[in-house]
Amino acid sequence: MEEIILEAEKRGECGKSVVSALRRNKFIPAIVYGQGKTSQAIKISQHIFLHFIHEHHLENTLINLKVKGQTKRTVLVKEIQHHPVRDEIVHVDFHEVSLTSRVKVNVAVVAQGEPAGIKQDGGVLTRNLWEVEIECLPTQIPKEIVADVSALKIGDYIHVKDIAMPEGVTVLIDREAIVFSVEPPAKEEEVVAPEAPEGEQPQEPEVIKEKKETEAEGEKEE
Image (cartoon, rainbow, N blue to C red; front, side, top):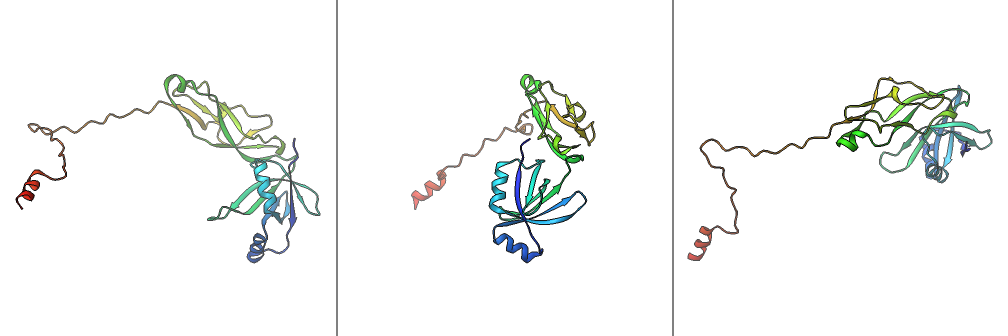
């Protein structure tokens, strides 16, 4: 497994003014918690972290957090907070984990293949769940859960219980929950013009000219 290292530094005082000063100096405030230890406030170079998130897929990725002057800690990114207006990261939460203890995480579900009901009958693949909650060792966290939908015909479903889970992974949500289904194609409704009342002829739309003839005649008389 590739060792992914992120460097950080300790930060002492907390508070709004201290955090604001950190951000002005191009640092991102962060916190590490978990494993029954006291939470630790840290700071990360904005340049380093932005480069880091472009290089790595952070969701459920094990990170070796190297805080200056301390031993490395294995963490997961729990939350990245963004400024509500400006497109910038304002805070990061890390969760420390043990490689020998199982963790609970949400993992994305992706469809593999093209359903038979789409190729043959023009059906539509509908997704009911985007992710599932699982439990496993940190080293067994899958990047994604793959569901083969190629055999689905119109009216067929794939439930959570139908998806083969990787070794060591336990599903924590309802196994009867529907993940994907194939629905019939949408029918185009024919627009029917309203019928004229009995005895009346359908009215033709009025054609508007630049000037009506009567107006033109009046102008000539003047």
